[in-house]
Length: 277
Ligand code: FAD
Ligand code: FES
Ligand code: MG
Image (cartoon, rainbow, N blue to C red; front, side):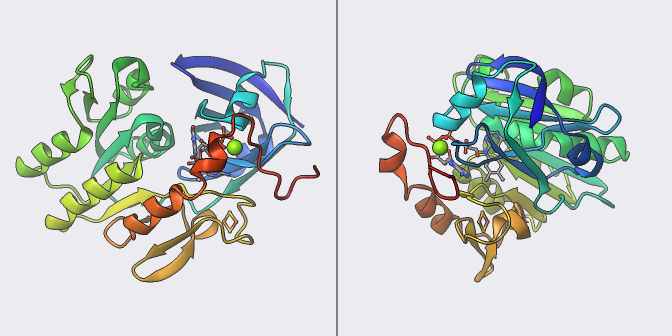
């Protein structure tokens, strides 16, 4: 059982929770995630480690209420317990030895990007960040990222804050202005990561994307999180979630993401694979 230490709403339906999990906090690295189960009857879902505090023994998760389990989780309060909280899972992001990095985050993808930005900045890396969302309310962690980056650029679909348009408009501008980066990291919707990767390919800039396929066990056993990268099959939960954006088969990933659309339309759908009911 894992106690919720803190809970804050940081955007419309976007919740930050600090969870007491000393063993995970002792080992977590940027890019890794946890699998949680809210209750004994619940399904498992993956959430990225959005921050960790080794001294306090806490893991921060930031999630958007999108369906059954995230809504169930959002009902819990400080002092309540989460049934299972397993991790850290996945491979840490490869962030060492970079000179100049451009980080691009879209929507709730800004949360997984934050520990990477912080890690790079604390290492003395020159890190520029572009974050975008549909409107200013959904643009999360702006102050925290401003404090941990060399330059921050904001974009909103409706123009309520920063550039009116997409993060990719700013990526294009920075690359055209001859801003040379050693690495680009993109985290967000698949179409955004595909667009960023195709732009950086033209400039030959190594690009990492974070894949978020359906995960059931999170340990490489079920095959649900299969992704094709450079013509080879990988499992995002153990081989990723970070992959080379120039080699990912995004078209297949987008098709696979849409596979369970009908089941997800059921208001109370709760995946029962690996659960007791
Ligand atoms: P549902 O109605 O069941 O599903 C809504 C959508 O969520 C689906 O269309 C699907 O795209 C996705 N989803 C559902 N079940 C799973 C599953 N078992 N595995 C993966 N995706 C699923 N979301 C955040 O808000 N914050 C995060 O930090 C975050 N980190 C993630 C890290 C990884 C490695 C992965 C794979 C996903 C991450 N997600 C994150 C997505 C999050 O797991 C889903 O939003 C969540 O599982 C939705 O569950 P639900 O029951 O509320 O919604
Ligand atoms: Fe089952 Fe990755 S989640 S193999
Ligand atoms: Mg669900």
